[in-house]
Amino acid sequence: MSDLDQEIGSRLRQARKTCGYRSARAFAKEQEIPESTYSQHETGKRSLNPETLLRYCSCLGIEPNWLLTGRDSLIAVEQEADSVTEVTLNASLRSTNIQSVDGVSVKAAADAVSATDQSNI
Image (cartoon, rainbow, N blue to C red; front, top):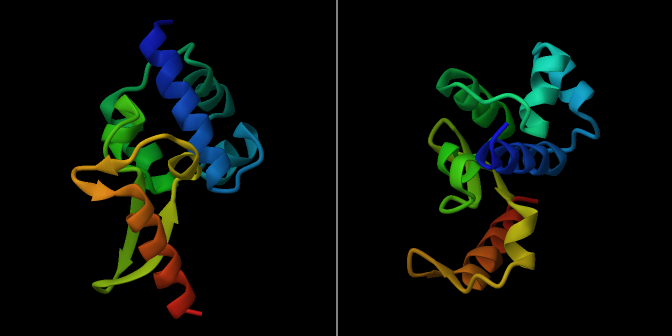
């Protein structure tokens, strides 16, 4: 078990909770993943292979680079038929001291997401 595996596991847990899964067991069961395997990934006791990492990212609507590094794509966008149907703003985005990502103001991005969500109601 490496420090990197533990960091990835921590971000995996954060993403699972952000998506509304209260437990690792609930997520694993719904996604038809062996519970012990998923639990070991979340605790960092087992490394992720690329295929599994991509599967988790798809299930949770997160970017692989964020899961691996904690940087870059903090906002996951799910698209259907070329229109945005859901925008998920990572909860940690608002609680960090990050001022901008790739030159885009984090506050402006969060405000735009909120405005988009309100206009779709």
